[in-house]
Image 1 (cartoon, rainbow, N blue to C red):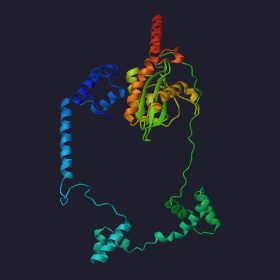
Image 2 (image 1 turned 90 degrees about the horizontal axis):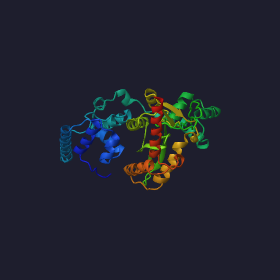
Image 3 (image 1 turned 45 degrees about the vertical axis):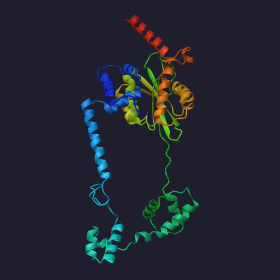
Image 4 (image 1 turned 60 degrees about the horizontal axis):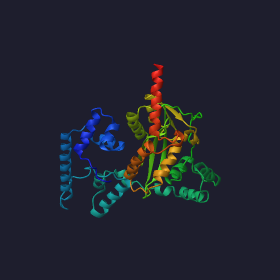
Length: 372
C-alpha cells in the first residue's frame, strides 16, 4: 500500500471542512480524493484535534520505547509478561505430574497431590475410560469402513442386529467422541416472493439495485464487491470492495451513499444472507425504504444491475491482474467516473448516465412547476 500524500494535519483540515457542512462530493472534487478515502479518514481521525493527535503520537512513541526495553532485556532477567496464574491442566496431566513427584523426588502422595491441586481419590482412581469402550470403537470402525454414509441410528440398528448389548446413549457418546457425526444438509427456506416487474420509474432515487460480485487477486485471495445502481438513469452510485462485506458494513456503505445522493424509495435485491439479515431489514424498515426481493433463482428480475455487473467485469475485473485490495479500489475509483460521465449507454439513447440524470431532473423540475 503506497504512503498517503496527505499529512495528518492536512487530513484534519479536510475533515473540518466536512464538519462545517461542506458537501462530501465537493470535498472529494476539491482535494482529489475518493469517497472511500474520505470515510476511512473520518473513521480514523474523526473528532480528533491537532493537540490530541500530538498526544497520540507521543503515547505511541513511549509505547514503542517500552516494547523495545522489554524485548531487549537480558536472558536471565525476570519479565512480568504473561498471566500470573498457571495454565489449567487436565486431571490426567495432574495425575502424571503427581506420580513423577512421588517416584522421582520422594514426596509423599499428600504433598504431591496438594501441589498440583489434585484430590487423592483422583490420584488413586484407576483409568478405565480409555479401555472400557474399545469393543464399541472397533465395532463402529468395522461398520463405517464399509458403509461410509451411514449415520448414528443406522450404525446402532446394525449393532443390534449383530447382538451387541450396549444401549444407544453409550454408543452415541462413543460415536460423537470418534467424530463420526454426519453434517446435515438442510435446504434454505425462503418465503414466497412475488415476481418483480422491470418497469422503469423515471424518477431519481425511486429504486436502487444491489448485487454482490466475487473475484480474486493474483495471489488467489478472494474478495467481494457490492455494486449499487440507480435504475432511473443506470448510474453507478458506488462500489464497495473488501474481503468480507457483512450486513453491518452493507448498512454503513448505504448510509454513506444516502448522505451523498439522497435516500431511495425502494431497493431491489436478491435473497442473499446479508440482504435478508435482521439488521438490514430492520434498517430499511426504520428508514422507510421498501425492499423488493426478487424470486429465488431469477436474476433476470434484477436485470439492470446484472447488466452493469457484466460491464464492470469485462472492463475492470477481467482486464487487470490485481495484487492487492487497494489496487482494486484505486482502479475502480478511476473507472466509475468514466462510466457515469463518458461511456454512452445504449438504453439511454447513447447518453452517459450523468447526462441522462440531468435530463430527468429537468423533467421533474418542470413537472413540479406546472403542478404548482
